[in-house]
Length: 123
Image (tube, rainbow, N blue to C red; front, side, top):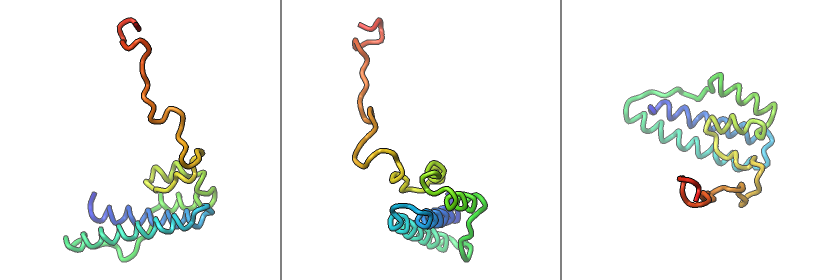
C-alpha cells in the first residue's frame, strides 16, 4: 500500500465512522472515537508521505463508492449496512451482532472429534 493509499483509506474510515455516529447508532461516542483514531493514523501516513516528498490532497473528498455507502447508511442505518461496512474494513460492527456480549455461537472454538478415532472403517 502506498502512503497516499494508506492516507486515503484512513480518511475514508474516519468519514464513515462519523456517518455511523450520526446515523442512529446506540454508541455514537465509540464511532466518534474510532474516527479520531483513523484521523491520527492518516496523520502518520501524511508525515511518512512528506518524508518521501509525496503530495497529498489538501482535504479528503470521499469517492463515489464511499458517498453511496454513506447515503445508504443514512437511509437504512448501520445495522442494515453492517456487512457492507465490514467489507470496507470499518471496525466496531460487533455492536450490531445478534449475540449478547460475552456469549459465543454454539460450537465456536469447540474441537470436533470423529467417532471411533480413525478414518479407516470408523472403528
